[in-house]
Amino acid sequence: MKKTIPYDINGQTLSVQDLQQIIEPALSGIEDLLIGDLTYFSENARYESNSLQIVSITQIDQKYYSMTYKFRWTIFNGCLDINAEEFMTQNVTFHVKPEGLEFDIIELSKGTTAEEL
Image (cartoon, rainbow, N blue to C red; front, top):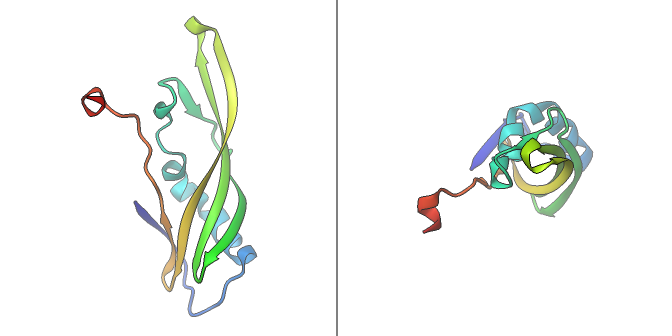
């Protein structure tokens, strides 16, 4: 899935620090997509709000970058005596385009029973 953070690049060459300053205020707009469907891990897994942080941004090609980010998620199941808090680190690639930063987000979701067959 492609998701763009609008920004008028206007031919500028942006540093990694510039990119981070553009992305950080816009994280809330792509947060749900970056976190994905945590039921992939468990029906009881929950994202800990406002825990999404950029770890690093690395240039991988001209105008292509990889962003490493982390977030906290919790799982609680009283019947199984599970109460855990975990950090997850993931990567996403993005392309600097004239109209903004286009993220290529991979969607993770728990498969249905029909898909497992």
